[in-house]
Image 1 (tube, rainbow, N blue to C red):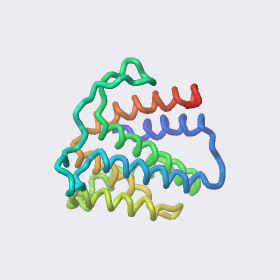
Image 2: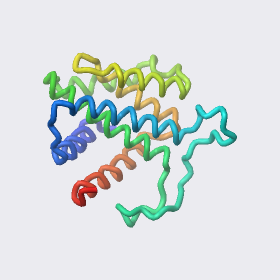
Image 3: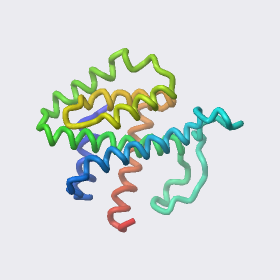
Length: 183
């Protein structure tokens, strides 16, 4: 996992979008909450009232208007990666605001990912914990907890970091195409 590379790739998209209004941070937090909810919806495990509680993880053949080469996708992974973009965005925002040494940032994230505190929750509890961390996030907040919780959610959902990175790169390409087309 090369966090520095992924943060740099996200920063390129962030700079291209170039939205610097005072409400930026609050909109990033809301965007992550929305994407987290969409991810939970694709996971479906909380839907005790539904006969079908299986995650939408099977590849589905769909035409993709943004990328003609992409015939298959995993809805759960795609929603997870959409949220990951905003986790990175929040991290970039905090690092720039408090002028945090980026190398120390990545060491703290790696330490928190290796920690055992993240590994005793159910998936439902993990979603709730991430919602809590996201709504509590501010410039004094220790961002590595949020990142580690999100990272572990991906593991709990059954994704490898390699799958997550590949999906992230694919979605990043689509996001740049959307910037070009104004979509």
